[in-house]
Length: 116
Length: 114
Image: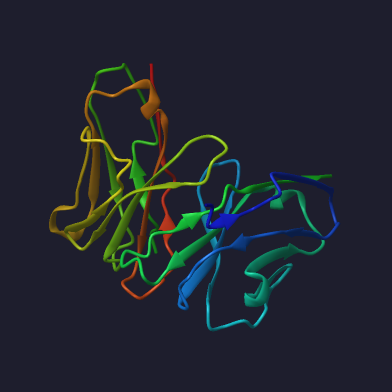
């Protein structure tokens, strides 16, 4: 069973629109960590945010915001006033405390296309 | 401040040849990970080091793959007798030792086996 589900394979919006990328996770651990990474066309994975399971506060960083809801096992990512430079594949990932190596379990990614 | 670096960035090899990739992590990070990524997929865990100790290998990793991290600094990933199915992007990441610490990735090595 998939532990991290990103149901949206591809999203295309026009610049300046707001867009939300969904992430649903599955774990039996009470202690876990959630991440979002951006992979632009250049290929390098860029870390965006880390959240631990005990911190459900939403976070805002400029045009980016994240909504963590344990009740629905979701960790959604919203870009406000999207820009062409936001075009990339975005990955959600989970790290479980019971795995001592803290390896990341990845979703399949959502390809975001921002059209000018 | 230098990030994670990987060398080479691209490698084309013929089936049956051996290849070796290098990863230099962020200097203060003691954890180092290798992942493989194919087109349209998320990264797939291969192996993990804490300092110089290789603590885990994925069951998906065949015996043709070996990794080292001498002295707990840079790491190498070697693939022997390459197969076309080995064609992928090989990613290295490093993190500090704290629980659930974020991993920082290098630019990757794209391997093409012809």
